[in-house]
Image (cartoon, chains in turn yellow, orange):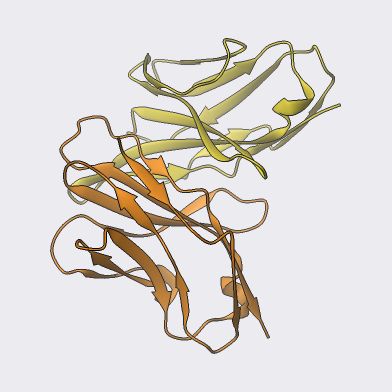
Length: 114
Length: 115
């Protein structure tokens, strides 16, 4: 099976702009989670989508939003970018491995806000 | 509330020596425990998990972890470290009774293996 893919891999944006990141999960996986990773804050959970519905949400401002399509592909949008949004954004899809669900991560999108 | 603690920001080990990366957790129900590794500029990769059964779990790349219920710990170990093991390691937990599959993540431990 192909792994989780994320596009683009690298982005440079200016403060105030908006950005859309894309994630394609492993075939058959219906859950997609998004994380923000920064050196100072570690791995922070943004939100999870399951069957096109947001199932869980972390503590991020409304500038961060997402959606999931019928083919389970997911997009994350950040509006009015701030310098502090510079981070590695990771997407993970969840699927059964044996008797439990495991998360499989994509390579991430490195966002730099200038 | 569920939580995970990785008490060491960084662990330094000489190549060939045994290594341990510590993790303690707090879960009200049955702990499902995971270790992931992240190499520079890469996503996280699954190493191993404990769900039930034998307290010693073996995973990828020669790593193993020991589940200790009384100490609520799940330390990651390897008998002989390699320079290539240098990476960022994350411990994660969730309550096995919870239908919400979201993991609670530790802050990560940077492992540095010196030649």
